Image (cartoon, rainbow, N blue to C red; front, side):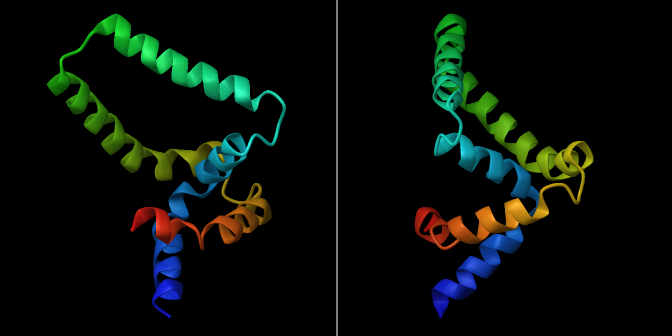
Amino acid sequence: MDLDRRVKTLRRELEGWREVLYVGHSVLVWEKQYYPFISISAVSALFLMIWYLEPSMLTLLSVLGITVTLCDYLVPQIVPWIVGAVTGQEHTNDAMSRSSPQLPHCVA
């Protein structure tokens, strides 16, 4: 009972992130042949940038915090404008229903 309530609450809170979560899930499970290359390239570019800039720990944590805060605020507002509110609704609903029972265990 408690798990069902947590799943419903989490799905409601992640409603603005639906399209981003759908694309992120497809990249993480490597649905296309070139997704491993994209994943490895993104992680390598991130570590290369951190290595090249050599920020202090305080600078790194503050930039990370600002980035997370801006993404949390801007993504739910910008993504529907870019993607469109109706585009791919059934695909994202299906992906959300498949992965949402696993999410409370990750968050808790």
